[in-house]
Each structure stands twice: as structure tokens, then as C-alpha cells.
Length: 314
Image (cartoon, rainbow, N blue to C red):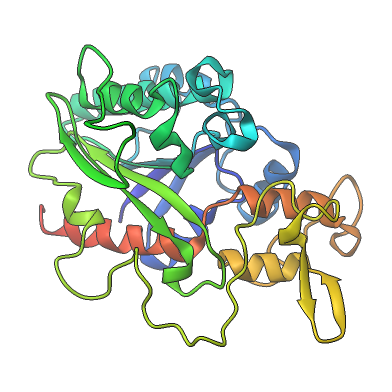
């Protein structure tokens, strides 16, 4: 069994994806009210420690376990056009470096316990690869254990690559949810990294044969693919992802349709909220939480690949 800790947990796509694989969550870290309420509703036995910046000290003090896996998607708004691309100058972007500090703390404790280093999975929007402050290079340099940020060979970082540094081996790749069985175009950068002996993250992210996950698998032409869901969806007519055109006219998409686009079960986000029963849960926070989430089938595929790779090292 593999244990994991989750930061910027949101509505826990990782737990939905990894529970069938036998992975066990040790703790979550989420501060937003609606996702936190959802975590308490669905996973009452897993503690939510809130502010992720407190976690490194808690791990070092032995207050929370140092898990096998660390998973998170530090806030992507800091790297996207929608967030004005303020990069690491934005406090939300600086959480990316806090993620590295947490990984270092987990590895330090695990070394003292004579356990192999943790494996971390990180997710962000593709805009991080062209961030004007080279946020991705800062992240790679910190993960790898280098003294300075790494620089891309061109004007931006490529959609896939590997770095083997003095502290960790790292691989990254842009994956699109539409090639994992979902009717949604959703390109995201996924990073796998670890200091574990013999572990090569490229084995997780890159297939040597079979279906590629960054190219079309031959989906029938009549099957529609939804635009990328965003946290702002469900609001105004400017939010194109909130509406669909049908023969009867334009209608608003439902939260259930968004859940399906992300790979969640129907009504997964329909929870008791602010003292009212689940059937009175408003749509707004459901749209926002789903728009911020990872796509479940993508995370499940990563979990399966991690499981296979780590089993070969035992």
C-alpha cells in the first residue's frame, strides 16, 4: 500500500483516482471553504490541515506522517493569463517553492526512518512553461537541488522533458484530458520527481509503446469535446464553458455535466453547505471547485504508472 499527502487538495481528484488502486491518504491541506466542506463530508477520517505552509514544520516535528507520495497542484492562477502572469512575485506562485520545502522535509524524516525518498506529483497550467519570471525553471532548480534556477534552451520550456540533478530526478509532460476518455479539452503540465534510488520519473510519464496521451486516440468524430472548464464558469454569458448550443437553443451546462467532464461521479459535489441540506447546495461553488480540479482519469493513469514503476524497485 502506498500512502500520500495532498496539498492544495481541492475536491480531491487524487483520492477519487487512487482509492481504487489501494492508495491511502494520510492528510489533506485545503483552505477554501467549499472544498474543505466537501473533504469533511466525503473523507471525515482524513485530517485537513488547511494552510500548506505549516506542513514542513509539522512533518519535521512528527506531528503528521511523512508519506510515500506527495501530490498537489499549487495555485495555477499565478502562472496563467487569467492571473495576470505575475509568476513567483504572486504569493500564490510562491506556494510552489513551499511545495519543494515540504518535499525536502518529508524526505528528511523518511531518511531518518530508513525509508526511501517520497515521490512527488505536481500539476499546473501550460502557461507556467512560458512564465516571464521563469517560475518553472525556479521550480525545477529547487527540486533538483541546484543552487540557481534552470534555464530553457529556447524562449520557453518544452511541453515535455527531464532533468537529473544532484538531489532529484525530474520529468514533466503536458497531458490533455480529452485523450483519457473525457469530453473536455484540458491541457495541464504534470511533473514527477523523486530522490529515490533507482527511480526514473521518465518511466512514469513516457510510454515506450501503445497509445500516446498527447495525441488523439481515434475518438469518433461525432463525440463533442467541451472547452476547458474554469473556476469562473457558470457565471455570465461571457463564460463560454458554462453554455452549450443544442437544436432547441442555448442552455446552461449543469454541475453534473461538469462532474462528468472531470471524471467524477454524478453529484459528487452536491453536499450539505452552510447549514443547508445537500439538495439546496448552490451551483456556484460547485462550478468553481470543479473548474479548479484535476481530471480524475489523468491522475488515475499517473497513479497506475507510479504503482507499476515503484513495484519494480521493491
